[in-house]
Image 1: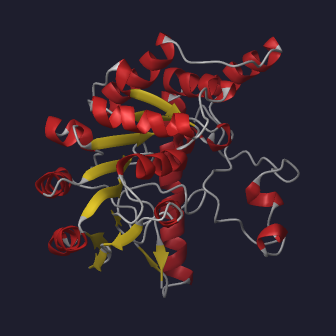
Image 2: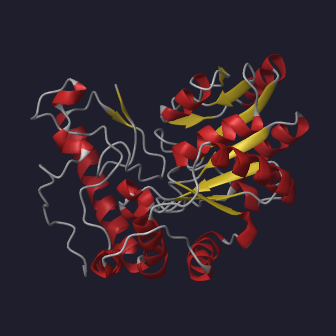
Length: 337
């Protein structure tokens, strides 16, 4: 390999949540930190170089992305997912979770019902309940070792609870499902039928392998795009979560105006300079690094699968085609007993 993913980098003493805050979280210092959504690999060299150049400049004032930033992000999604976006659709935020909270506030009122599919990334629940909306759960079903959507219950919950907004995780964290096109279309048709808006968190879109294909939900039909806020970011893909940058795409002008108004009301304007620099560099220079990373991760998956089979057969590995770097730095799926 061109890139050395075997290199061990000591992160202790770097103020990282993963290794330096175990005691503050009520855990022992020697506990394996498998609860933090970042990897222990150094990011791509092109990103490091661009950040180093920005630091060397010595002035870190208010900044904004120009056309080359948009072209980098848009080019990535067109090349890898066949999704063509427009510049005016883009709103940058300091992370996808922030965007989820803004969407809940923009598209619903206090007391409204917001739907999710548990088990799901815990901030989904927090942005609903902390903003005084009603959390409605249509749980995923584990069938024959993998997770599926109960579409009958999904629609029933929407009707019975008068759901206004659906927070979708695609690909799904933590169960590892890469939703098939027909599943996404069924979700879209149900939401259109009952006037439910969709916020699609697609931050793990780059981590699919084999025959699994990530479909950008909004790209499947203009009718779906008209009800959808699509949340993307380079943070999980390139291990730059601490730089807090995400790209939110909203083609519907009314929804975009409502979302932007909430971001403005929160007192937020320009994103982090280093986040801008890293994001552009990632999409312009990081493709080769990512290809090798995924090969390395697949090797780690094979290792874990074999280890569990030989040493801990009571633990079942749910393998659904997504490298879920939020569960372990190298384990791509949910583990359950």
